[in-house]
Each structure stands twice: as structure tokens, then as C-alpha cells.
Image (tube, rainbow, N blue to C red; front, side):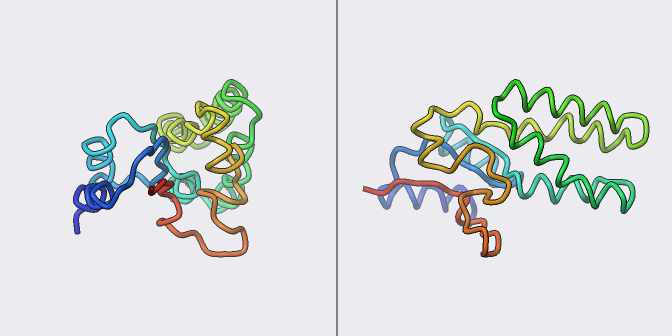
Length: 154
């Protein structure tokens, strides 16, 4: 089943009231989400962003610390503080890892949508930017993509 058909099937089965979608950056899923849920806020999954950042890191030392550094961005108390933390991180990597710095600057903002949610929506999804529990998964369990889709069926 293609992503668009998957989302349309959920709607045909009664999915309503979707306010926020978290997913990885799969091109087909992104296109389907825009087509079927165009007005819904989207956030790139922070777990997947961290994995991607590791793959863009030029050496083992950076790979070992990038997750903790990204947590400072995602665990910021406000969007403004997160943006400042991200700018600081980008600036810190510009001299030694410019490709990573550019990737962070371009991609990490897609993981900050949670800061723009209403308090009610954010409470329903999870505490803001919970690195220890992205996508509202159980911290003791493995990351499951299916738990990134927050829906409300009648």
C-alpha cells in the first residue's frame, strides 16, 4: 500500500481531528501527508533526525556527542531558546564540520514544530520535545514508527 492510500484509508475508517503528524522524511510519506492532510502541522521525528545527524557526522567523536547536543535544542523551554541553541550548535561545527553544520541548520528546524502547538495539543501528544520518549513511545521499548501517528478515531 502506498502512503497516500494508507492515509486515505485511515480517513475512510473515520480518522478525524488530526492536528499534528510526526514522521520521518520519507519523500512518499511527505507528499501523501501534504495531499491528504495538507492543513495539518507536521514535524520531522526527532529520533530520526538524530540518526540522520550521526550519519552526517564526519568522525566518531562527533557521532558520539551529537545526540546529546541535539537534546539541548529539543529540550529548550521555548521555540526561541531552541532556535538559539541550534544556531550555537551550527556555529560551533562550522569551522570543523561545515557539511554537518549546514545539514543541521537546514534540517533540525523541521523537528521544532512541537513548540508551535497549542497547549492542549501538546499535552495530548507528549511533553514538549521529550528526547527520552520521542513520538510518545514507552522509554523502555523500541522506537516504533506507527506510534508517531497521533490520530483520534470516533
